[in-house]
Length: 506
Image (cartoon, rainbow, N blue to C red; front, side, top):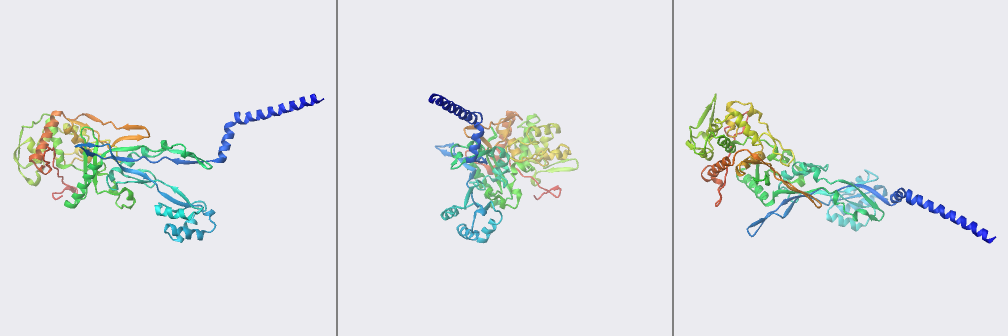
């Protein structure tokens, strides 16, 4: 009898064990992920987050034992913590007392705090951009209904240095102008999900740097940039310039070492600017007539086409008549017999016309295309513009003649600087650029310089360069002499258009 009862009990225990095991198998194996998610949902929260915006750096050359070390960097655009104070008004029992205590700690009136509490029952920002003193005072209060939130902001440590180059981060979180605008999608952090468990912040256990935007290292040398901007400031004091630009470019690669503009602004305070034109980078966004600095290109065209040689002689009578119009030299001067070099040394307008008349209009316009004056350079900055010079293409013989000395042809300063590289680069044209490399965590992408084919021969480039050295050594450009160096240069003046006509006083 006892044996029978023991067998029945054993049988039921076996059945019960089988049921428990099968249920565990169903829960843990077949539906394990479902129940795991349910359990996680009870102890975890999820929130969308964004990675930090990438930072921007300048190179900072430093002379060591007679050599320059450009490996050091200076920050141009970085992120910094910006704390705000908020609360949940529905959790506050005595708003009057709460406002009194808070207002004393952050230096605001009780009424302003109460008005913020009345705007929403769930979320009220009490103060943005808390100072360190504010945070210290608030933490001393030890109030349970106070919360701090970090809202990182963009900061420009160099203030107005290279301001048009860098641009700024607008209120909507999008880059505006310059580097910030052109590389906005690369600088911006990616979106991700923050997972927090009760008492445990998973983001503290695993880095989220993969969400951060890429960092940019510019070709700009801080020391050269600073000196260029200082020269512009001095020009404002000494000759009262309205505006000015300085471009320092390596002609063999297109690497920009300085991109200075005046007037400038502080990107940290961009919202205070009333004249929005100041945000424009004149070097890529404003078109101008170059005037006499264009003459070396006219000389190069005539030499390259073998219509003249450096030893040829030109006689200047002070003017040249083309149809009903007449071209004069500056101040109506007459220079008499001159070499080809003399045309550039004394910046003779009639000499430039003489050179342009040696080639056909089609040939001249072809070189304008090859020099890049009719299209954008492709520099990595937002908002670059260019002119097609349609007026010149369809203009009269007189307009064609004046274009030879830079009047009636238009371009941007960066187009002009890029084109001048042909004289120092054996006749080859380059593409200018301002970002040297892009980095993200352990990855690095360097910019490869782009050098186009020859616009002119190396022989022609050398001949024109020699003439421009003569401009500095014995011509109108002698003020640019530097003891111990041979410099190639070209002076330039241009008439302004006033009332639809070229002014003789501007």
